[in-house]
Amino acid sequence: MEKSDPTALTEAQPRGAVIKGNHPVDQSEAANRFIAAPRHEKSHDKRLWELRKRRDHAMHSIEEWEELRQLASDIKSHTLSRLDEYLLEFEKNATANGVHVHWALDAEEHNKIVLDILNSHKAKRFIKSKSMLTEECGLRDYLKKADIEVVETDLGERIQQLDNEDPSHVVVPAVHKLCEDVAQVFHKSYGSDEHNADAHYLAECQREATRPLILSADAGMTGCNYAVAETGSIVVCTNEGNADLSANVPPLHIASVGIEKVIPRLEDVPVFVRLLSRSALGSPITQYTSHFRAPRKGGEMHIILVDNGRSERLKNETFRHSLKCIRCGACMNTCPVFRRSGGLSYGATYAGPIGLIIDPTYNLHKYSRLPFSSTLNGSCANVCPVKINIHEQIASWRQFISENHELPFVKKAMMKSAGALLSSPKLYRKALPITNSILRHLPHFAIYNRLNSWTTGREMPEVKRETFYQWYQKNRGEKA
Image: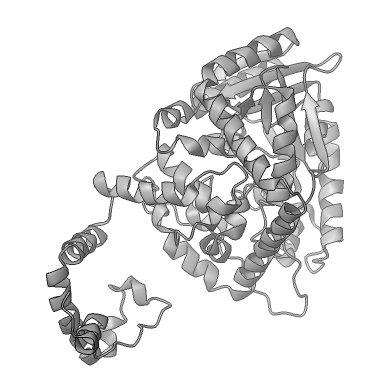
């Protein structure tokens, strides 16, 4: 959420991608609408690039930064190679701590387990802190159908919930909004002053409206940053303290944990803690790093270990590395496509570079276009705190999508033609002068039209009368 200029003209907030059932998400169309709102696009780009610069400053303040990245990556690789063993160790130790441990194969099973727990306690008001896993599972809508009130306690998540939008970023869910957008949302929901876009005023409105709901809640939920096999405990990192409220104010605490979040030992936690907030926000540490090991006195604690496609990804040698992700959002903050198109343009729970390699594992057809929303510049891999080779995996997804016939017909035909041309040096040398001559004489409308997406927002480069090969032959007198 970026502060806005109260004297500027009002600009409607662009909405996200248009979802049409199982049809491929058109990220480009939604991105164009976001770019067409210049104040939002400029604010979004500026805010995220500022986070990237802060990350770089924090990185340079730690001499052993690269060693930490390698150590974190190695810990994750080791854990994933023995994931079953560490999960069973975690379950054993958590159960010994007095925690009820559940296993969920998919989103539906996860949601059913949560609902059964809530029903067994006759809970009707359910507060929760930020959790991408519950977004992935669609928990909020599921519980709403069961007449259970769900209240997001994270400021950004609450804004998005009230505006009926998904989070646009894994760390800063409402970063695409201007303060005046939030003022409108709070006016409709809380009756606050729609003309007061002061950030402090808006935060106070949220606090006053949500705190009574927290104090009267029947149950609370947190996500999990790290699940420690050695102790059977979970670690949750927040900057607002809302996870502590969700876990400790109601008598019932439920934690949703992706199976990839497990790490072997308690001494591994500081490695990730030093990397997480520096990578996400450029700050040395989150304001709250909370360890939950057992239910509080008189309370009850449940942990749900969720697969939801992670085991399938683990079996794939090419794409299993995405399971190392610690949800810092650094790859989003540095990505030129994400910064200028907004997270909601991806039409999926996970946006940006990390989303391009995660989303197709859930639905290859629906998200088949997303891996092409990248420049493959490699900046995402350079900033990843656990050294995921993100850009290489994006390229691998493009190849996989092509091989599995998920490319649009026009793109497939163009790539096939380009492949034939570029694989034959003789054919290429003959075709290039002819093509250049044609381009010089074609009318404007023949080049700039909807069939040629490359010229959308771009000018064609000047077509030279002489190719490099022709120049080389003429000036060097050598034949290749």
